[in-house]
Image 1: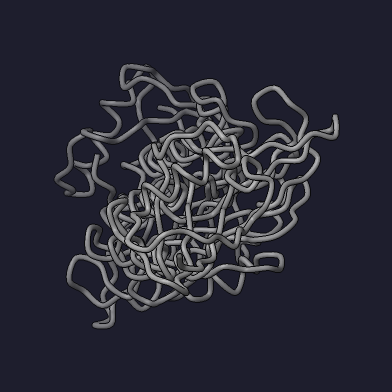
Image 2: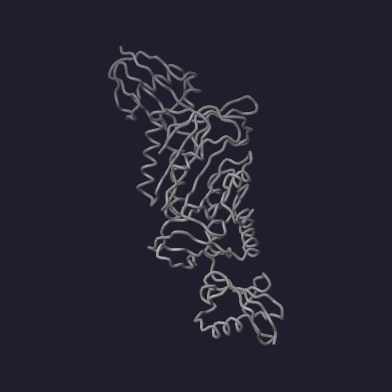
Length: 137
Length: 137
Length: 81
Length: 81
């Protein structure tokens, strides 16, 4: 399942959605707000989204991962709103019978969400400026 | 750091060792005891180790990962003793400035630990038999 | 002339200085023509490259036409994660 | 003749039916010769393939010799994770 969260991401709750007795491996990725980007000191950032389309595109990516990889559960949550250094921006978790599929699906979901889900990052820098960041296409 | 644990692995405590403000990505792998292997129903399993060499080889793998990949923190813990279905057998966590290095280093540590650290798995099956399992070489 | 609402997202908010615009335009216009006249009016130098047009929360083609009362959106490349 | 302790790990415990053996053998024997005579005595059909010999908790070569009082170990392929 793909979700958006206006509050701090609850990784433990998301992880519990991926647990099942036949799964031997679980891979998760957490994206944290860094204190630097492109040589500038970042103090905070703000994520906004086209929420309806973000949920739709995000769910579609989860379903693509389910059909492309031999996995059991896949979950992704993206944070919206104001984030500070060290806050979690995205969580992706995948359980599978075997580890390779879990790694591959987790990375696929992460990369595709970054590229396709309509969410935008606005960084706040130490010098008072802000900047809209775009991912590499 | 590489550690062995006779008790349930405390993933939250291990993860906190990987957190730092310049890291933008965190990847972790958890290996869980599955209820099946090679067509047999598994009810429990037991991990034993040559503890001194396991710690030595494990720590060496962490250091190899640190020098091969552009990562910040790398932590791995392997469980020893009796485990039931769903219990965590291994935890690997890596933080890095960028996500690709975190994925690569996490998978490298996992694969190398499975292959080289002197730890052995004894599976208990539903039919009462037990079996020493060997990883693919 | 018809009335529409235009929603801007991501860096387009910075570029146009606002996140939505109420707009009057002629009927039977395409999304592409609308975006270009929007850029012209606001003296914004921008191409449609990488931008996805949306009508009423559905992705559409640049050649799609819109109707009175539609809510149009322009989505720049994503930068989540 | 010298006295040594031999430690067995993983599937070798199952194979030899015990996790350690106290053993008397002639001096100046190699790890390889010792392992082979151990297999012969216990009627175990096993090769050294994949097994790592250890003397006093240090990995050694199959041609290494051992001394009285040494603790020898034989480690089959790992199966952690």
